[in-house]
Length: 571
Image 1 (cartoon, rainbow, N blue to C red):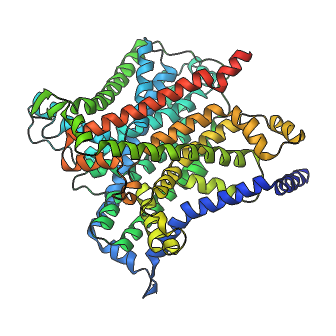
Image 2: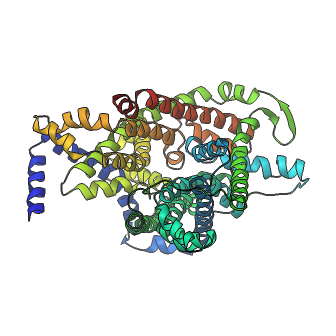
Image 3: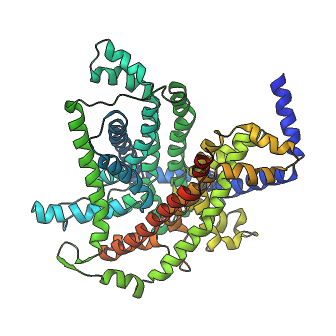
């Protein structure tokens, strides 16, 4: 009864705050218009024809296409393989870092570099490296192993590249879970005579099993939604993302592409629901709070040596793959003429409008980053600190973009803002403009920022903000002067993450970008498809420098101006 009265009082207080009510209404309108509406239009497109009315004929037609049925099978095969391999390698790295006493700090630094590289680089860099190292003109296959007809294109090429791209995500997720296991549980099993392998299989593994399932589903969703890697290294091995793209750009079949997009969306949404509402809750229930004390690290060389060597080999190989890109930009003709040259960098700016590509990408990403960071913090604040009826709707829709593949969102925007309800209305001019690209960047980065903001806000005592309200401050004043300064680090991190994700995005924007704008990732993809690896590597190298520099600047800024430093000084 008291809880119900408290909730009613909270809602009454909320309705008396016009700024907060306006913010909620605007937010609901934004999420509905730019996330739900495009997806709804896709669904309507796939089941409704202007002449036939409601019909399933479009689905019947696409399922009769052998290429589409093959693409579904291929996508699921790749997704399961990448999910399993990424989870296993991520678990290996996380276990070694948390449980094994590393002999040098270099190992820890190596792990941090490997976990950071996929974040600051374009999603298809490893595909370029794979072709350059193991293709027909590859350094390893052609010049070291003397294999002249090796092909990296197809199933295994996609699986290897995506695994190396996504396993750091699993590593970061599982590292946190392993740190939260109380070491006394495992030590009790050891004291009873259990071997290390028995302790791992009977104590550690059952505790992190929901977390492993969570990591698997996250990488499965990322894998089947990935567009760039299958496009570059897939060859004739079509996946759903590439098939949808070719259906709309090659066959000009917008309705068929919409139906295919609905099928892909149904798969990713189903997996997302299981991950979000089943496995995440089980993980939280299994591991509550932090470990009670420090863990005794494993020093037995029979365990530490093989695990450390295996992790080091994988880490060095991943770094070698990333180094291959800047090195490839310095050779005259990769695979044939290895004289050093800077001509590819020169051509980027003289012939291929590099300045325009970098300017457009930089400015659009720079415009989207603060919008994304601020929206993320506002949504996080409403979800954690406020009680109102539409709270569940805002949380669900803002996180929904995580499960929507970029290709699906791109087609939804084309159908929604060119031919849909707003194709003739006040938003007609949005298609082909900078605004639609900025909106896509915001929508794609929103879930990451929101999750970070929710985690940060849950650590703030509610009484701090309540005291500000008691002194007469309105919600806007409290948010700007109390809440935001307390989560400054999370806000700055979300700002840079949004910038990096935007400037390296391709799957959604490749369908929406017009000749008016040049984007770096689209240029890289175009030259990689043509086999112009020197130009593609030059573009990618400059892009990696921009993104890596942004992350370093953010870390430096937080170090000297962040919340954590001020707290330490106060102490």
